[in-house]
Amino acid sequence: MLILNGEVYSGTFSFERKNIRIEDGIFKVLTESPLLPESGEEVFDASGMRIIPGLTDIHFHGCNGSDLCDGSFEALHNIAGYEKRCGIFNICPATMTLKKDRLKEICSVSAQYRKAQGGRSDEARLIGIHLEGPFISKKKPGAQSESHIIRAEEGIIEELLAASNGLIKLITIAPEEEGALSCIEKYRDRVHFSVGHTAASYDEAAEAFDKGADHVTHLFNAMPPLLHREPGVIGAAFEREGVFAELICDGVHVHPAAIRAAFKLFTAKRIVLISDSMRACGMPDGEYELGGIPVIKQGRKAVQRDGTLAGSVTNLYDCMTEAVRAGVSAEDAIRAAAYNPLVSIGAEAEYGFIMEGFKAQALIVDEDWRIKRII
Image 1: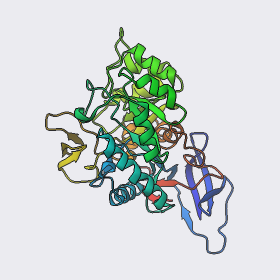
Image 2 (image 1 turned 90 degrees about the vertical axis):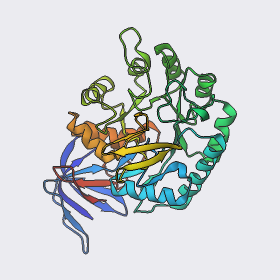
Image 3 (image 1 turned 135 degrees about the vertical axis):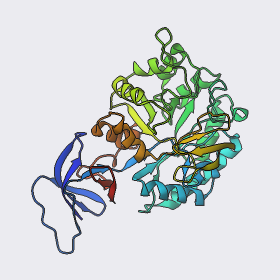
Image 4 (image 1 turned 30 degrees about the vertical axis):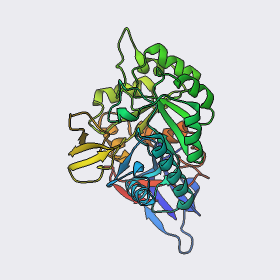
């Protein structure tokens, strides 16, 4: 296949006018020089359009009426199909805070699904699982069930890792809680830890990062604010160059000024855009469920009955374009949605760039960010 005359988001994190040849699912040639089609080769004229990498969401719960915690192949197929249609090629969906045995079942089903999924072109690839609980703080549960929150223990983590067959890539953890720091230190080479749903002080968060945690779960949300005498998790993460910060840009969770501030604080190298979407994403307004808790979707907002925010109802592609509307450059927003998520969980080897030799995951979009073609 040839894609001609497009503005290509390349390995320099910028747009360049390039012509692209794709062979056997690989970007084979990127050049400014004209390319002539071979016999029978498909040609797409991308004049006036941008070609960007497929996106990766490492923190969302569900969409299109299904949730990872449904624990079924049917739910995973539905989720993966919807995500791919929205331009998200790789997914690392998140669990809720549930009983250990239920989490083990979800992990086991997900591992079996990943093995059976193969390379289906109509679905996003399941590249991991994000455990957003149960090792969190009861002071900052958000939409998580307080009754299932437990202390972090090595034995439980071992059981969950085994049940997932290594598919768990990320664990949200409150470092101030008993057992958290020792688990971070022991498992830092097998899984990434994300500080979140936490009431940690600056010193407590700093110790967690120094022991190996390298993420922050949905920056600003479910954590203390950045204060001048108590900078908290945000201040501790800012000072450590190896820490990535998740950011929900759905137009609800974070004000546009805070989005711009986050990109200035952490730079485009360290922001990971996430959707944190739940099963109501892509569905009509009404009542849904998240981790056993009733959730009401009204337009762009999903809340519990008491008004507490409960995940988002916006997919990652729309979060990326919302970040651009908030004043983030297109180049930075794309990096934060396509490349950084992969790097942050160690999965970037063949994806996340439009470069020769990389797997051909790409979106062709027009000047208004409408997706014209999914490659």
